[in-house]
Length: 493
Image 1 (tube, rainbow, N blue to C red):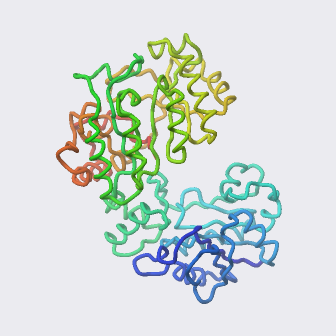
Image 2 (image 1 turned 45 degrees about the vertical axis):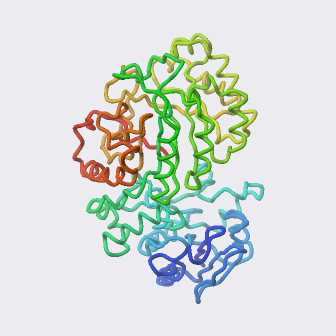
């Protein structure tokens, strides 16, 4: 049995981007792979534009542009290797002990494919057999990854799943240094822990130093306005002690300017309590957001009433960075009226179809329906209708906002074991008047962290670290009352 190791370099990566704390990562990976007796040879797969050399002792192959699928098919077709251990060149935390155990499992049972569900990327790799690649049809989409293909067709392949403690999937960290946020987390781990940890120690690292995960906001929800023309039965606006107005453009501009400090990509959600398209400067504010290089995507949550041809034209010009979510809880005029309080079903449905015909990319547009007693009876028909029209569906969990509104859920999907709150780690919720709420449950800003008009987001976010750390340790906030919240296990981008 002949096993080779393949080190895939990310597309268009530069040599300087493959250094981590002064060490050239591919050289470190080569040393780790050379210690594994089962590995016969190491191949470094680079792109045409890669400007660096590969480590001495490895074989350089130019081919990463053609995609992982096509490359692996060619590799096995043109070599006498039976299996390949595939890792990525931007993995400074790659654990040779994990790789050795995975290879031991693979060579014992000889499956077509071995991977791990719980060990995150960057700590481990995957093992692919020649027989697997020979069975994959040539017409399979070349851009799809092996792991995506296998996981979508598990019943068709002989697969071994490797598991190693701890299970840190709930932290949603990929230990790949080409991702700037993950690189920042890894740098903080080494800073606090003193060295690169073994995988079996990473859970203890997080337990001792949870602050390593707290690097910057990645999801910023902004309430452009508190105004809305609908009267939805599940809306929390009715509980407000005072009406929310329109955000002054200077506040929105200050938010964007302050976010530059973190120098990391982030997503900005235009949401909150009102309908954002009712803001008189909506399009101007969206242009401001799209002008920011660090804004990865702009997510617009709308009721769809004003999402007309003008809106569709605007979205089509910047569709690569915009996601539109239309809240549409109804299958017809009657059900829509009973849930939204106004009869706009035909108009909203027509606007969604206009958006779909204007924006062909499916990942740019979604309809969203809440999973509550009132929608359960027509949920199947709702799926059939929008799937036929080619519009992806988001099934939204109801949030009662700490008991502000009636609980209409017909099932509780909360996990038995509580985990640290994802929102306290990465989210900011900013109200129309500039208040930065404690979290998205603090919808009136009663327990706000400060006002962006007076304090920088840097200072506000850094002051919030103590809340995250205490929550991570299980010491839940009393104001607001985190103990009665069931949003801790949900997450955004």
